[in-house]
Image (tube, rainbow, N blue to C red; front, side, top):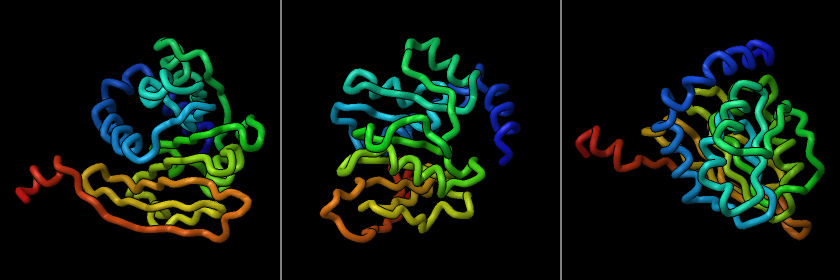
Length: 195
């Protein structure tokens, strides 16, 4: 999706975003935080939108939110989050290895070069630092994503309609890419399907 058009679309939806998507986003955030909890240090929410994830992590870490939509950042700032940056996820304005934990929820599939954005997330993540990334399951590249320099697992959720990648950046001693794939269905999906 073209960057300028994407910014305009999210600027237009920002005031109603939480009302429309909070329930869905809270489920994704809950899953991600069950896998990767911030443990102090600098935490990055790349594509922070209105700050729903920041609401959950700001008490335990120094959290930075980055987004390309000024209106989304204004919504997040209205919730009291001061450390927000208007920036392109494909060119993060952060130094190498400055973050202990990196999150990006349902954003990368919207970008022109998702691989470049993943490279940027790994660049700013310290060696041994943890990450959690989700992509909408319908994105053509959501499954089987390659994240070099990381040990991670891939979880596919039918009920949340996302593919999740959680893991850590390898240290200098680590070698190669290691990756596990699982498919899961949460309790909500089981109830709906009668299983």
